[in-house]
Length: 224
Image (cartoon, rainbow, N blue to C red; front, side, top):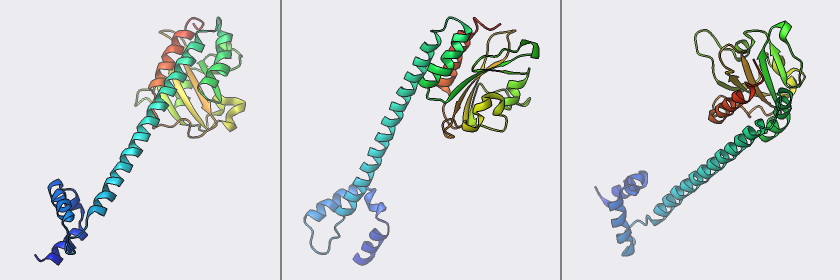
């Protein structure tokens, strides 16, 4: 293969040369003693190194941003859990949910959904009563699969049953199924947001699961 053929092959597939450390060292050494017959590949090497450096910097920024968001989310949930410890009665708990907890978690509204018979129904701000089986129906749990503990999604046609007069402005929701103990009524905590991207199925749920566990323990003392 003559020099022109070699040169053409290198220019056509420079990655074959750039990816070989031994070849690159030989080329750089040759370039230092170059005459007009030696192709200068330093520009290609520098461009490739700059590209890799840019990728590393972007990855570094993304990792730092993700770590910061994670710490921020942990702090929010911890402060919200502390807020749950303040109320001394059930009405106070509902007030804290609607106010302090909603503010800390940056959601537009919070609803506590309880399954009740018609003769048991209570009227209180932030409390929503549904008939027995209403929670599974709202979440969309089927007999062919286990009901989800946490469900994140856009609001659907049934949203009015939970968000009532706020339905039109709530675009996404987080549904936290609660376990209040054997023999106790079924319950669900719902966070609603006007931002349609606030809650989505591809988001992590570990912190919401932790919050749900804490809330269960806080509310059991008042709900039979």
